[in-house]
Amino acid sequence: MKAGAAVLKLLCAVLRLLSIIRKNTPAELHRKRNHFMNSVTA
Image (cartoon, rainbow, N blue to C red; front, side):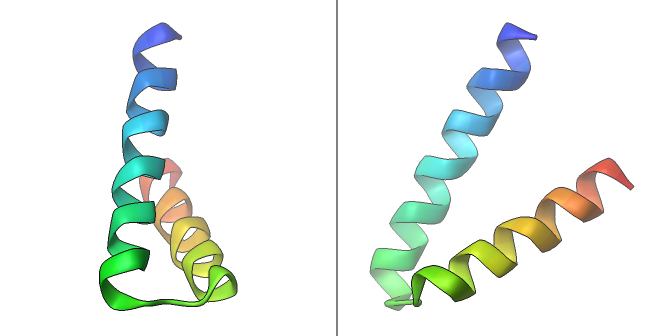
């Protein structure tokens, strides 16, 4: 469980960095994260 939480924290940090670089809107970032999580868990 701890490893999974660490991965999620890292993923969120990366997405935040990408959003700054690409200047994505929070809604777009949220949609991308949901799509990524769905593809991972599917």
